[in-house]
Image (cartoon, rainbow, N blue to C red; front, side):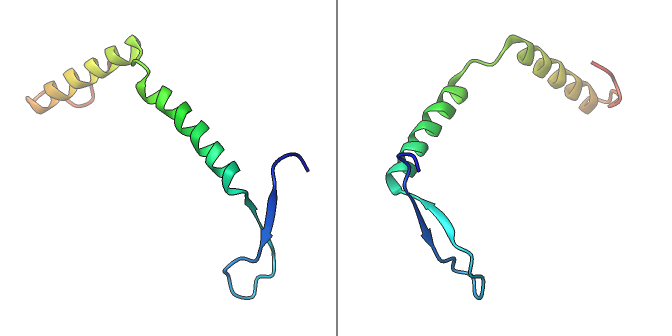
Length: 75
């Protein structure tokens, strides 16, 4: 195989005799760090202007609806 080591362990389930692959803890840690870095970038990215406009329109529509307007208005 490549430089990724896989171990085979028996599952905790009763009579099931299949083996489950387990990643090396170092590989798991590396994948975890990479995923966290990627998602941190996504979470901290600015919200596109188009979404901000749509959110403002939705909020305005909800305010009109709660003030007695109709709820079936189109944006």
